[in-house]
Length: 491
Image (cartoon, rainbow, N blue to C red; front, side, top):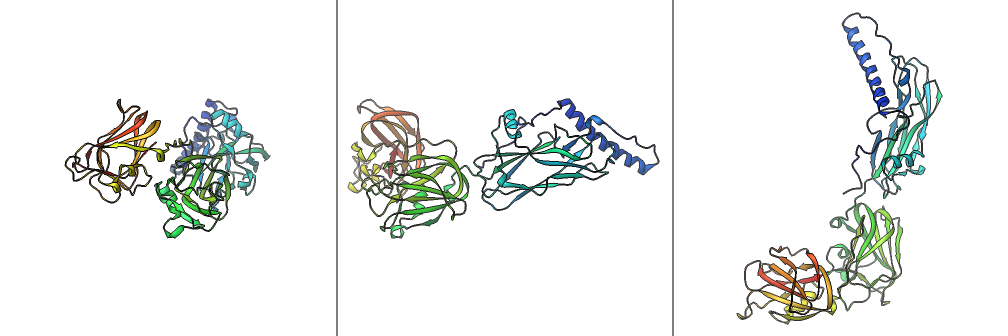
């Protein structure tokens, strides 16, 4: 998705004197003049005819920006931000209302009428900004119509988009300002061409395309920086043990609008060298950087934090810098980072899962396949129900979690077993209770996907509260009597 918008007919020119009827008549006058000249040519080629009478409609004899009498009089231009490629627009003027163009040389001065931006916005309910002068230039400002013609030469407007901040959209009203030679007046209604400039900006993260654009270090050649944006909070970037600062940079492979970041710390509760003082920089080329966030003390929360920017930015690259850790250790780590555009997402609530205990369960195969593995933050470990004991090898299979206090649950994210497949839960039910006697339905999913490479998000139709959470597996993918599951993360 980009930052383009469709133009609608509700966005009009700013009226400046002529009524709708007069505008229609003017367009008709242009068309009549063209028709009479064409008819004259056809008749003359066939036989001698009476001379075609000269057309003179003084009320329509006026200078206008060429083609400005079209319906919207607005030219919508999209520019690729960050590029050095200029865009050039040719602008001319013309007049009608007559067939006699032997009126001598006609010259007029043209340029930007900045005051029309506010007028246009007020009339159309838009919020354009005036394109700053440093981003455009004219090759000249005089338009000239030669004697015997009704259309001028061109002035050329060149726009350089390289450093434009395209979190905004811009309007540039180019107008005929004054007549410097000749006696043709200016048409106040059609003297302006409105040019809208928008950036080619993506407003979706597209993390599947992101690549690492550099890193200070990656520990043991296995804790790569790319694991900080692999959509798996159980994996993480881990630095070498060689001191601060540490950093990694990301190429988002597209120009992005960034309204803020989403940051998730490493999940393991016994690992505490979490980033403390961080900065985030953005840029267009991966070389020149601008700091957009400076957080002296990032919270140690183990769930996703939403960090808005003071002001929206546009960039292709960002750089995450860790200047210190909460423990003072010479290393650090990060589980996940993402960007958002527009409305900030709702931050995750810390459910303090590390404090939860297993109250009871139907079965577990052995201690290596314990129910506690469901909430240890590691998708590689798993709960496995009893597969051999006939008294326990039967459906349903269930696990009861004690969340230690009443908590409101909006949904549950799950990872299937990672090292074997076929016995994943199919029909799964979650319920909550405050007393383990009266249960309230939270989620009932009869056709759970067996997709194991991505985390699945089961949203509750209605959030429910309770101290106890019960998970019940009614069937598995193979319709057998045991099952296995990697991770359960309520939120």
